[in-house]
Length: 184
Image 1: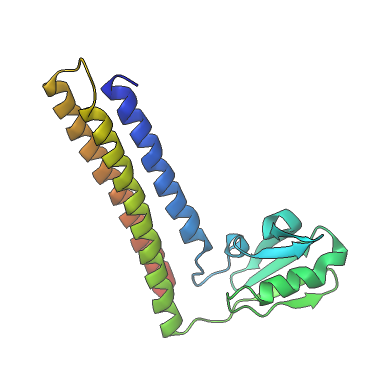
Image 2: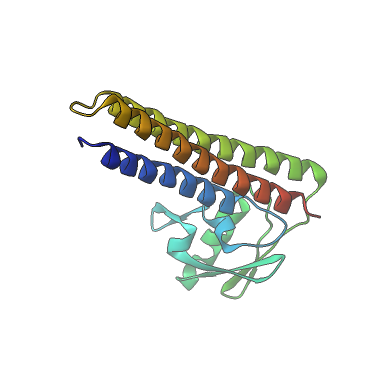
């Protein structure tokens, strides 16, 4: 790590990870329509340990306001239903044979505002990650030996452009998710 390009490349990678993390967080926030990723955060107690929903069941969204959960192990239907019911997502699952139907209740204005606040928090966490990556890269640039001041200044300018680009991506995602949530 002795040249500006490798520092900028590493920084871009770190910033991209921050943006991807925000995308994943946004996917788990419930909007008006059903999405299989809504249940990603739900942990199911199976075989004496906690497992992620996608490790123990297939989740699909056959209709805009309905999720279908099919456990891989048919004997674990009750455990999966219990995990969904206790997940603080406000969902009321119903078992039908070996399948769990999860109808999504319509959201009221207060719930929409709470979710919008959550989206803003996730976006801010992403912005912080991007800023940390920029600060780390700037510190590395200042410690470089054998590189001209002009080269360091140019790299810092490029670093700032990269930072602004990534923050713009996060803000655009936040606005889109917020619009999706507020849509009645």
